[in-house]
Length: 288
Image 1: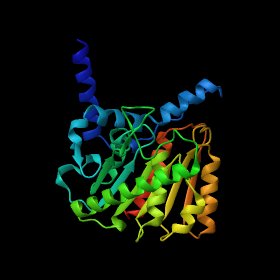
Image 2: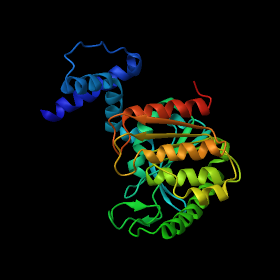
Image 3: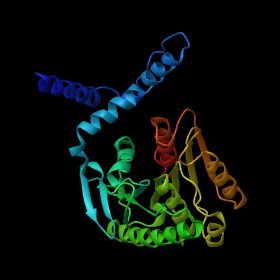
Image 4: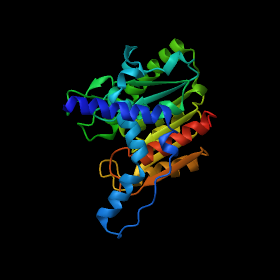
């Protein structure tokens, strides 16, 4: 009986999404409530119902995503365009400390319907994370030594640059067709990669990260890749002041930077941040 109900729910969601107008364009009526903390939470949930339903729907039907694991120099989760659409762009998503490619690939669940010719490539870090052996890392954090961390990040850059060259060869892409994005430690790596390459990437989109070593990065700057940084104001893992420091670095080095501080948000990527990032990427890829 419960299985039947579940199937009915999925069928209803599929019907609404296939024959009705896009849910994100359906206006949600405003509900007047007494301004209490609980009611504010309820209002936020109601406001985001269309996105929540869509993400739930796609998650339940994940098999339709051509959700593949491929091996380059880094094991990767690959989400190809639907219906064999021609690949014109790529978004490389770099996970955070202790995560993996499948974790960060969840961003593609909403983004891909707006980016029909885009392939999403989500590599696992090249090292097992000692704090979470089922996950990976881009650089070790067990030693609180800036020189050691810098050395580790340089090793990660070499591996990721090799990986990106493999991706470009495999899918016939150049840097101008690639967006580098990442969360936390992945954001830190995206910033380093995107500003020290021989040619500009289409853009960098970073969540909850920072510049690892400003002096080192400044000495290696080669390009001025347009960048968006998004951070939660309540982040205690990578405090939000690091975003402000990064913004100052970008401005002083004449690199275009946009920043967004998400209220009441800690160290994660909420729907609001995902939507801001998507709009930025669509603009950079000239998709409207």
